[in-house]
Image (cartoon, rainbow, N blue to C red; front, side, top):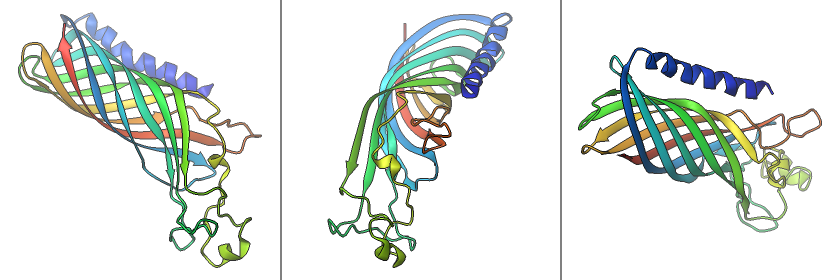
Length: 253
């Protein structure tokens, strides 16, 4: 509940400056629509800790932006998107000596990846500085984001985790898993709804009177957990952290 309050506060802090600027700025009335796509690097903050590598995935979707004011040199807009995003985590399965864990049942190094696909809807305060037409500007995006799970798939090359409990002698000889946290490997996503905050920065190039390309880097911090987080649940936290690099094109209507 406290995390939902943070989202509410963020919405107020994000959009109140735009509203106040609208009272004194130069009026604009530009609606733009387009699309974007990019690459995501995701991990989950588990507690107890699950050792991971960055999970790579694609994102793409549609974008709408309404530019309402220019306040001194700052162009003020509201931007909303609907994206499909491939998130999840990739485990770093290693021994206490940081070597690959070879499962004696299969003879190959253990690999585990969870692919969780979301429909995400971020809503930004979009602030930019530079050329309005035929030129380059820099911009910032800040705002809340919600997401809904549409797919949850597991990729692994073994049937039984190579744990201390299964192979105690091998574990003490430094060939079993250093981490004994394996509950997440068989647990489906419990919370299909995700929410958090997103910050982005980038540059935009106006190539003609109505079209523009942009390049942006984003950071998303999830405030919701994919698993239950009560005292009776296994994980205390299980929230997303994501870095996104994306390109887009917008057309002014």
